[in-house]
Image (cartoon, rainbow, N blue to C red; front, side):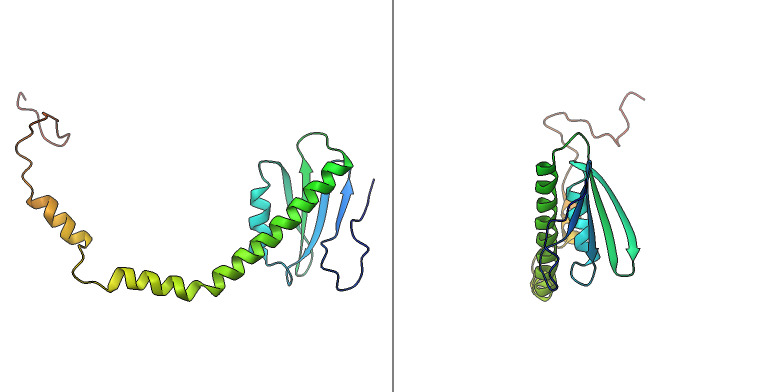
Length: 150
């Protein structure tokens, strides 16, 4: 059994898919949905179904979702809708990440390099080296020390 979910109008924002037995198949245009978004959406469906990716044409990725158990046509249509929504979610995540990358870089640079008075890893290691570890009131053995008996 094969069915299309959209009327196929040119410029339609709907993501077309085919239904077949226990499968939903998409042909996704990489100019609309970047490959990283396709991979991200696919990854989130790994626990629910088997995924098969292919390259039927240049700039096109085919995604086949095969259910792990028997599924009705309505369940397959719901699965296709969930995948389409997750694909859009991944596109938005990528675009927000790109739009805010300079802010994240600035924030990290400020956190790491703005206050020279903060303790650095070297300063913390020097503090640890300066501490006295000879006395152990809780009698906790230090594994790198040799026992007194031997």
